[in-house]
Length: 76
Image 1 (cartoon, rainbow, N blue to C red):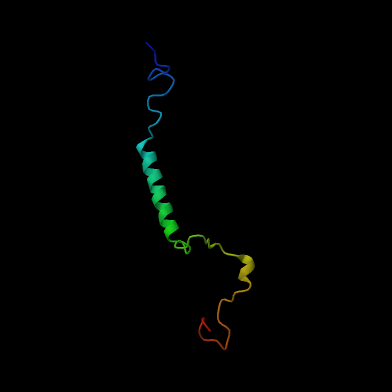
Image 2 (cartoon, rainbow, N blue to C red):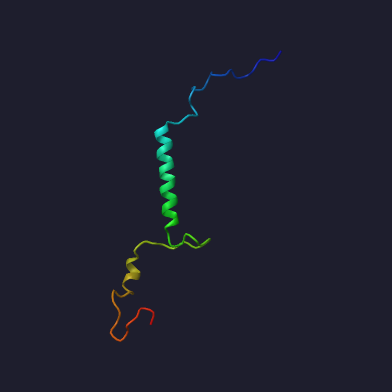
């Protein structure tokens, strides 16, 4: 008769694979918040495009806060 090489309960903690309920709740809330923020991004519907939403100081000097005099609409 062959004896088992590992006895159950020896060498491991009894609840090593369990995590506390508060940790599961926080992890679920963080995952939900991450999903909400990812869905709110401008590039959420694109597959391989990432749009940076940070303020670019170097590019800011090329944009104007208001329209120049002869123009009435931004599209023009």
